[in-house]
View 1 (spheres, one colour):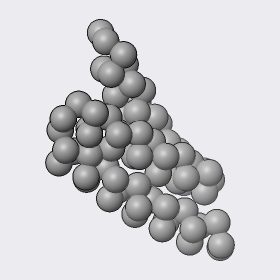
View 2 (cartoon, rainbow, N blue to C red; view 1 turned 60 degrees about the vertical axis):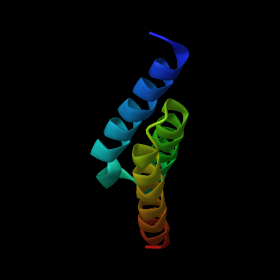
View 3 (cartoon, rainbow, N blue to C red; view 1 turned 45 degrees about the horizontal axis):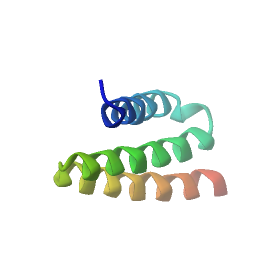
View 4 (spheres, one colour; view 1 turned 180 degrees about the vertical axis):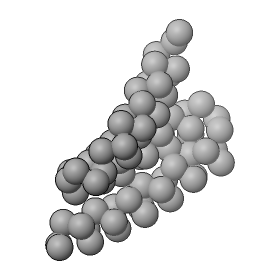
Amino acid sequence: MDALTIFGLFAVTAMLVTYALEDRSPRYILGFAIACLLGGAYGFLQGAWPFGIVETIWAGVALRRWRRAAAA
């Protein structure tokens, strides 16, 4: 495994874990948003730009959900 593959594995694993824990705290929603940004970066670095775009959009959606949850 090269460094880029390990980075991608970390990003996707972080997305899975934080998504599973979102109901526990708004921090996990923020963590999911950050993990989505990492996943998007991985997609762009790998050359899979559609994946990068979708993950970046997911990060925006998660940030919006985090703002709402943190305000409540």
